[in-house]
Image (cartoon, rainbow, N blue to C red; front, side, top):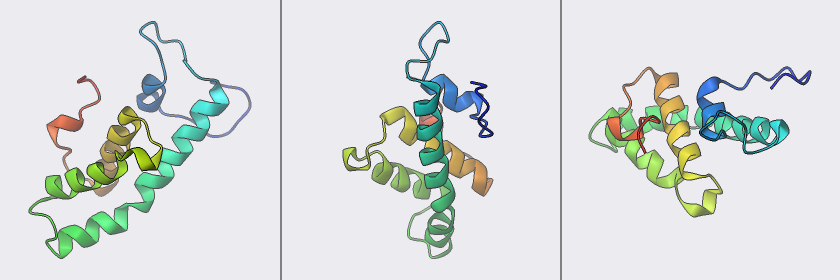
Length: 108
């Protein structure tokens, strides 16, 4: 995906947009736009997740992540199911929290 754009889409996100043979199912511009949306969403959720954990609105970090996943996986968000999982994994990474096993992208 090197067309002169300075945004580097990570392999974990490119995999979401690729077929079994590793070819993109969307244009590079579309993949980049979807990545930017998901990355911005994950970054924007950091403070909310920290607040939920701090004020014990969920029983654990995993509970916070599950609750956020339920919100971002809603059809109203416009995210594909794999994008919603990626957002939660990225959020866990940004927070340095372990991600619940059910969000592992290598699983169906």
